[in-house]
Image 1: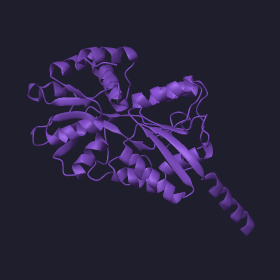
Image 2 (image 1 turned 135 degrees about the vertical axis):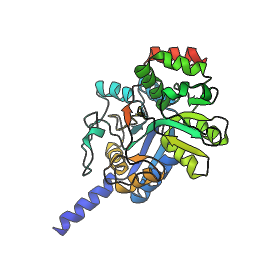
Image 3 (image 1 turned 180 degrees about the vertical axis):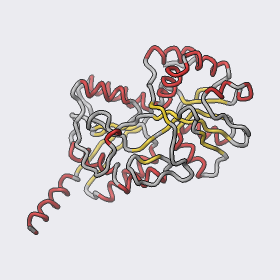
Image 4 (image 1 turned 90 degrees about the vertical axis):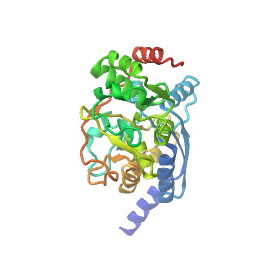
Length: 312
């Protein structure tokens, strides 16, 4: 029996060896915290990270596939539609969920990709510039908020692409046209937008909840508003592609993201963990009224780009 246990231990160590390449759109500081924890737990591993906006990460994967030289062992970004496209082509590896208690609704791809924490698009306000914050998406059209609002570029940010698609689907494209008339500005990314909001360059932002909480932890005069008509739940799945050179290690990293240690790191950095019984972020409400995101299609994105003078 002792020999069997030792053999299994040696085998598990052998699996957690080598180099893993992660392509992601997640905030680099958050990814690095998880990578450091993983490499501490598995000292024989090295995780290389390519990080950019979702649009650029997807473009990189497409270019590598066209060149027949894909490099990523693990994919993690805010574009579920692209993962569905890969799945239809048989290019995603099915991973059996071996983490006890994992909510199956967070593996909508049937084991081909997994949510590892929850990310919401919300309204954030600078409390020094806005004394009466909006409580719904439609509130943004009130005259008092004119010239105060900004959001990230949906060509760069997958979360912003979800904002455009969801608001257009729920309220019509005319709602986005009304936001343009309100003077809404476009910044490249959520981190850039959140920093400018913290400095008072804007009064209101459509942005990610976790990033605002991170700015608040630094002392920024910000508040997170979950709209009463539904915060936008943005899918940001993790998947192991079939071309992975180290698929066993990639699966191990995916399972690590669902471990108590990783879920604690998510909560500490402002995210809602996906695993039951994990602590929620400091100051976050116990429950959120959320609507699952609808990502903007190409036609809607092109109309948005024309509306705001964005160039591809």
